[in-house]
Amino acid sequence: MSKAIKAVVLGATGYVGGELLRLLADHPQFELCCAVSASRKGRTIAATFPNLAAAYGSQVFIGHDNCFDNVDTGSQLALFSAAPHGASAALVAKALNAAAQKNMSVHVVDSSADFRYTNQSDYEAVYGGTHGAPELLPLFQSGVPEHVAGTGLPHVGHPGCFATAVLLAAVPLLQSGLTESELFVTATTGSTGSGRTPQAGTHHPERHNNLYAYKPLAHRHTPEMAGLAEAASGRETRVHFVPHSGPFARGIYATVQARTKADLSEQQLLAMFEKAYADAPFVEVVAGTPRLKNVVASNMCQIGVAASEGSVVVMSTIDNLVKGAAGGAVQWMNRLWDLPETSGLTAAAPGWT
Image 1: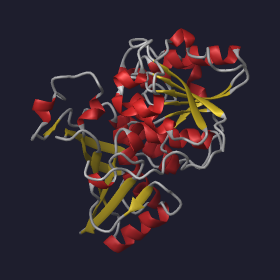
Image 2 (image 1 turned 60 degrees about the vertical axis):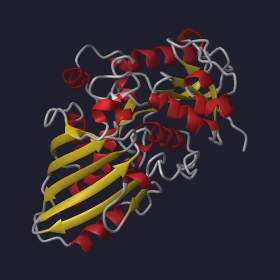
Image 3 (image 1 turned 90 degrees about the vertical axis):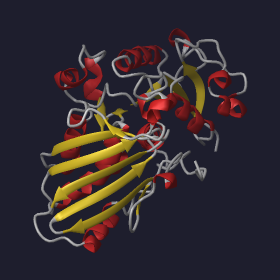
Image 4 (image 1 turned 60 degrees about the horizontal axis):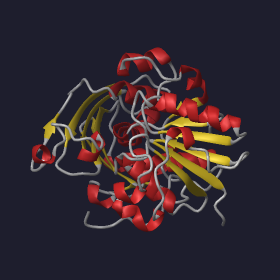
C-alpha cells in the first residue's frame, strides 16, 4: 500500500517527537514530510536521534515558516504536535492557517495539554497564562481511543501519560456502577516523562536507586483525570493522586483503588475488565499483576486486578512515551483518517529494556 497521507511533526526534537518520528518511519500510510524544530533547523534528524539514522539519513529539521514547502496543494495531512504545553496551541493554529492556504485536508493530534480541556478558563486555571488558540477548542476532543466510540470533531488533544494509564484502569470501574466514584491513585513514572531538558528532580544521580513522591494530592494532571473519567463514564469523579518518580527511563505503573458498593470478587472484576476491553487491541487484561517490562517500547497497556473486603485495586502499566504519548497519538490519527487502528503500531517491542 503506498503512503498517501503526509505527516508533519511540530516540536520534533523532544522525547515524544523522537518517538513519533520512529513510529512514522514504519507506518504504512503516513509519510513524514517534515520534522519541525525552531532550535535545530537545518540539522539532521540523525544528529539528534542517532537511532533513527537508518530511517531518515540526511533529512533535516525544518523551521516553522517552511514546514509545508514540500507538501503539495490539496494534500491530505496528518499534523502531530509534540510541542510543550503553552506553546503548542499557537503553533497548531499557525500550521492550520498555512494548511488552509494550500487547501489541505488536515487532522491534528496534539500531545500537549493545550487541547485537553473544552473550556478556556479551566485550562488557564490549571496551567496559568492565556490559551494560545481558544478559537480552536471547539474543534478538539480529548480522551483515550478505547473510551471514545467515534468522533464528529476533526482534531484530538491526547491525554497525558499519567491520565492514559489511570483512565484505562478507572473508567470500567466507574462505568460498572459497582464501586464508589472516589478513586485513590498512585503512579510511578520514568524520567523521560519530565522531558529532554535536565532538571534537578530528573537528573540521573537523583533518580538512580531512588524512589520518591512529588506534588502529592496537588499534581496538575488530577483535574484532567477526573474530567476525562467523568466524560467517559457519565459519573462525577473525585481523584486523589500521588505521583512518584521512578529510577527508570520509560514506563508508568499506576495503581487505582476504590471502595465497592457490594461484594465483588476478583474473578468478577477480571471478567468485567475483559469484557470492557474485548475489542481493544492495545489493552491486555492479565491474571495476577502486570509487569512494566512487558509493555515498554510498545503501544500496549497491561491491566491486572485484585479485590478483597469491599475494596478493589486495578493496576495499569504503559510506556509513557508510546501509549501515553506518541503511540496513542498515532492510534488516534489512524482513527481520524479511517485507517486500521493498529496501523504502524504492531511491531514487536524489544525485551530486557
